[in-house]
Image (cartoon, rainbow, N blue to C red; front, side, top):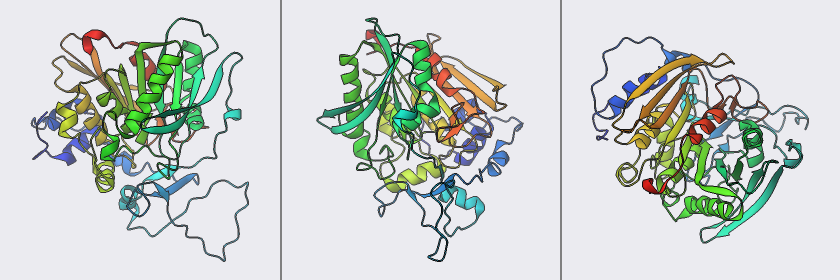
Length: 411
């Protein structure tokens, strides 16, 4: 991939939001802008797509002052304001804004839901949704593990699911419906839990340089618990996958690049490319304007099959980041690419691009969701950060994962 110097990133963003992913990829690689007419101005749609629901909580971006966490903005309430009843719906707090449009970039808006308790999740007879704790050289963390009722000695696939900021494993399981699909298709699902001690908003620290390397920080922690599950349960070690949303999507991309000997494929939903940031200021800049992978991830890692989902009206993580994720994942593919369009059963339009390698294997699948914000596509509305109208990202990822197994020839 060529240097980004001199590339018109505004044009890359425009092409991405219009669903013209192949053209955006060419431009990122240094090609001239394709001279084609604009047919779907999604950027205008993005400007009017902000959700005004009272269950949106404004969040302050990471800063040195708040320890690198997404934190609630100071409330505009005064002592004279009456107390809010405990049973009322979550309210939206406000703080001084430089203007509606700019505020969408400066203050990403986060969905706020009551906590999902393990007891509220439906678990079929014979299935288990267990809590475990992993401890290794890099630290410790808890995780939830879903074991379907149809267990036997046959090795099963394992999906590692990384939640986004402010979420919990239980909330993420509900929103993505991944447990239901695990029961249907007979695989295991692990949900590592980020602690508030590690990040006040429970974000995976994808933007820390020490949390982007093999055998260090959070990648080592997640890889360690993944290996523990593989060894302790009937898991097929060649069919282990990782996926995530937002900060979890960014960490999934890092894990795929750092551990190609552990994971067979990666799913990134509304995330960022590995190495897109190295500290808190660059994290905020990447989320707002896009961040490319660092040279180490472009030249020093093997590329894993990757499926990418991103809403083109996402005002928390700029949708151009999906192109950067795709650029890092695709590397120097010498196959072909194909773009198609469609509409989900819920009425959301999307553009889907598939890129293959020289052996005609699909190595990249990228979905641009037209009009979608920062939310998991096609999920359960009872979870947080969910867009029920969109195509089913969970099923699409599982179908994509099913096409890829890690083999000794790829190590």
